[in-house]
Amino acid sequence: MWFRLDSSRFTPVMLLKTVIQAYPLQGLCRPHGRRKAMINLGSKQGVVLGAAFEALQNRSRSRIKAQTLKSAPKAVAQLKVVQVDPDLCFAEVVSQEAPVRQDDKVREKFESVQ
Image 1 (tube, rainbow, N blue to C red):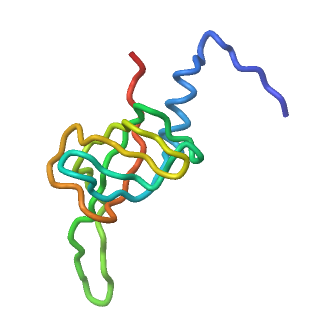
Image 2 (cartoon, rainbow, N blue to C red):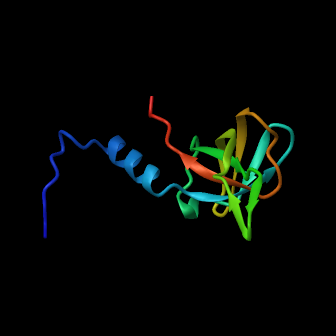
């Protein structure tokens, strides 16, 4: 079934925001100096200069009877990509609640285009 989108309601920025929110790039990072991080995603995976990521760390686990329960990971740092290579990128730490650690997960985050 084919349908036509009303282009006055769907701008390219809205489309990009929808895609990033539904299918964010996800990877791993590690510290690279004091205020930088290296991420295992690059231009081959769709990372562009200025892209925003958040570093995620697992919270504590709880054990109830025979079941281990994990809570959702917590965003501990905001990252902005400053250099992109084919298979990795480097990001500066914009803000942080806790230091970026080896093998922290990262998730792409949509920031509005100015």
